[in-house]
Image 1: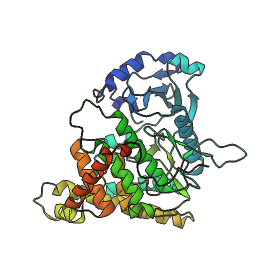
Image 2 (image 1 turned 60 degrees about the vertical axis):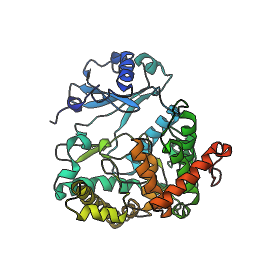
Image 3 (image 1 turned 90 degrees about the vertical axis):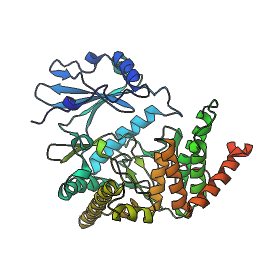
Image 4 (image 1 turned 30 degrees about the horizontal axis):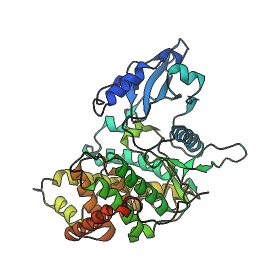
Length: 436
């Protein structure tokens, strides 16, 4: 029997940044573990696993059956915007149940959920759910995907992409979140998407409205949260989100987005959310918190892949010049991406053989310019100011074909617009958000 997952859990390790360790210690001090399960034949782990929203404990029965107690963390003190926790969790549970019933994707079963305000959640000290556990570890912690033979990569990627492709066969009329079904109507209802920065948005009938809502929320958040005591804020702290709004409003790429029906998308099916056994078989896809019905173009290479946003000339230089400092790393990534895309094409072909098709090729979309721009927008603000600058120059090159000089002039023009008093409250609009 494979070891328990908790033997590899790191608890507080790697969380000593941004006040996360203090947040976790305060949270766990208020958890009454014996109330989670009263069965004396079930033991609760001391080690825990944590993420941005959840803290997990392991429950092991005498017969070896494994469960996970997934407890909801309170909002981070520095969180911006308003997240509708209750709606997001309801949608996650509904999505998990729907995907389990309609696909072969290994989604954990949910055995119990105690929402905020329930008597049991009050006793335990937090909203929590009990879900199916698996004897495996995340793909991220199991192997370096860029340093294994191509045959091994193909085995993992074939499974990975088959799940993504199968999920995309579940399509809907609007962009939004999946909510619970009823016995009378097994098709789930589509509701607003609960987001961290933009509150609840949608549902949308058009993809450009979705992208614009995300970009606009980033801009408004930047205006609200920029520290006025900073003498020299990062150049793109406010300018970057403003430029995203302009790109979505004016770039031809966003005027020719694919129409609905729209696919169900995990939104975070990276190596960190795939559980594998010792033979690198994917045994579970976890963390469906962000899952939503998304635009087709809201797809990019998942972690640990970076998305290639280099110009064609730069990429070719890195690949062909063996003495270039970026040659070795770029070559490994490029080759792994090639294998990954080939796996996507096989997954789509197999679905077609079975009489099921994906409306649009994910293998092609994942390398599209729209996908690259969405990836840049999602990455913005998550790294250093230098990375933000690199990403913004790449964004206007991809969106408008601008070289460095033209981009610099463009950024100066947009910065001047922001200084205008009206720019603080009004930005380009592509129309009101769609509703149902």
